Length: 167
Image (cartoon, rainbow, N blue to C red):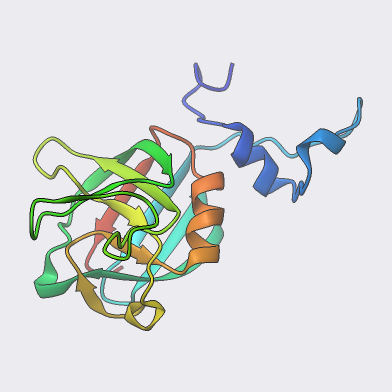
């Protein structure tokens, strides 16, 4: 019903919104918070903040890093996929690095963004937490490992991600 009304909800969305640590512990008749407004994300490049909104209400704020040389485009993406333990296809040397390889910079989670003119972007963790709050990536949104894990769980596929310079 929610998808017909344009509200995208996934199991992880409900888990985060309701602070459910163990989904197997749900009880029949337990009351849950269900979003009735669309969830979307806004990345503010100048302030290095990423906000997840439920309608007009901020659900979460994350410190992020983004593209060196201003390589993160100012566009509206959509969440195309969510990958756990992703391979990294390096645009630098053309190699593919499996999850766990020292040259795989994605970390444990990759939230893939989609845009016809700007393929290959997304949000991921980083083995270099000191780069949060800087322009140092190849264009993706870098997040601290606990933050990308929560974002990965919370954000529904097909929701919008708007990247802008500032408010």
